[in-house]
Length: 314
Image (cartoon, rainbow, N blue to C red):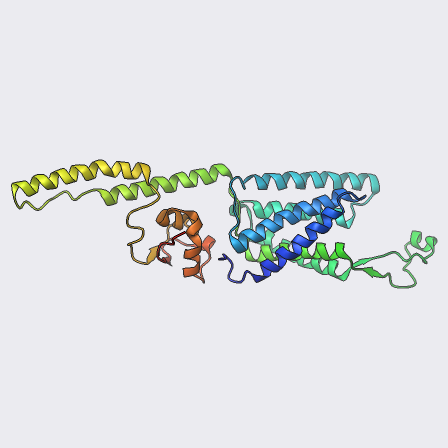
């Protein structure tokens, strides 16, 4: 199951990134090992983001990825600045690696930090970068006189362009970033404290709903004295059982499977939060996504009607 309507481009990009990752790791012991290590780190982040968008990959503690990629971005920026001071130029590979690490950190940030104008500008930049890498890099003409090169004269012949594994891998990373910026990183990562607070609020809300469902009616039908006493005993047992249900099973309301198959979304709802509230597990969100193929989980609005499938077995 997938959270994207068409996951096939993501699958192709995942395969291309896996090949690019192998290429960069094979160059990790060469003279440009630092820039290849930066590209490999960016490819790993893109690999995870594509898998999260296409297949719902997630793991506990993923909020630390934002800070890890921010640290890598700062480190790459420091190295690029030192190259500018010592060599007089940063170089296209280092500049591209630094920007890639920064964009990966940007896509791991919470949705409130990602602004549409910035996302659109980054999308256009990486489309341009992908075209540049696919076109190839110019190689210096060894037959050109050194004096002409020093004086900045144009070469007699147009320099040849090189298209190798390095250029293809960098183009694949640029295309993957453009794709994620276009569809939106579905695996946007929240901090652990925010996730814990949201989960706590959902559990408290579910507990309150469960207690309200279990509370008995205030009036009873007085038929006979025996029936009245029996009804009172049942009411006392139910009132004692209600707090226990609320304390021990807050995420499984008894009416989850028997409610009508239409749910009205609340503010801040996602498919995962709905699955946790109604089915007791966030992993069952895919069944809700399949029942609502034209609805995006992150764009639910308060009052929007969501079709609910029968409770999945797993």
